[in-house]
Amino acid sequence: MTVTLRYHAMSKGPAVQQPEQIDRTLVDFQVLAGWMDARGLPEGPFEDVAPLTGGTQNTLIRFRRGGREYVLRRGPAHLRARTNDVLRREARVLGALDGTDVPAPRLVAACPDESVMNGAVFYLMTPVDGFNASVTLPEPHAKDASVRHEMGLNAARALAALGAVDHEAVGLADFGKPAGFLERQVGRWTSELESYGALDGYPGPDIPGLDDVARWLEERRPATWRPGIMHGDYHLANLMYSPTGPEIAAIVDWEMCTIGDPLLDLGWLLATWPDRDDESAALAGPLGSAGGLPGADELVDAYAGRADAVTGRDLSSIRWYAVLACFKLGIVLEGTHARACAGKAPRETGDLLHSITLGLFRRAQAFIASA
Image (cartoon, rainbow, N blue to C red; front, side, top):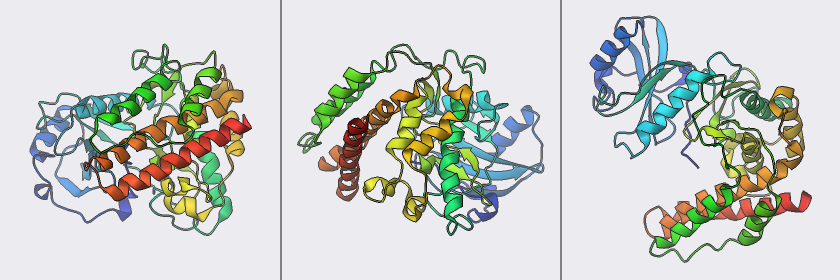
């Protein structure tokens, strides 16, 4: 599970800074100005410069130049091995989605050449006027249960819009490796879990139902499916909502995007959907606590309401995808627990995520029982 990208409405952001107050190793505004000028973007001084708060894996800086507003996205100060490649992929997907009705930040321009800005790939996108409901819940959303119910349905509808995009038609035919995508999932994540055994102090996975869930997934895997664009980490914390109503302003944090089976995104939404009776509410913050959200079947129906999203896709198997999402996410979160046992992550965080892993496997078993 990635660290969530969260940013709020432009009018409610952090204190404005001058360009010289931003670490030049992150963004050299003189270099940025020359790069933007060469691309014919509006010229002028940089104004209203401010970092955007939220995730820790990447840097987000908003600014205005030549009367136009931008958000610059680049990797963290200490680049990880794959950060630049991930940013290149993000920019490519956002560019491909331009012209579709998928709610997402629009790509303005991208710099895939890491030699331009201190070794970092970066891109400019449009700012999002919205809020993250896993961080805050303003009015009218907080008091009106009907608004929150529609927020939930719109989460499924926005995902259906993504599932309806023809990835080949928008230039993403070579973006992923869809062949064998479903067939390799259980083995891929079982191997990931086994790799945690190399961490000193980790006693191994104590996850009731682990083997039973893995076996069920292998035995019930859908025989046919249709490839499409996957977000890869689709849950409420990666959605921005309109400040005035239940509409989705943007799907954000495209780090895990690929070409695979889009129904796994819907399964991921079901796997992480808030339930006050288990640990899943911790993943949704104020919106999960407020309640009034639609149930799982309503989400599936909302997704199915867009016929072009489900053509060639078997929604009767959606519980299989939800179980796979629980299995995969539970194993990902268990990795932090393993690192905590080895002293490489805070023990409190590791224990919390382990409890969520156990909850995800209980949810997987509930999905299996209802399948």
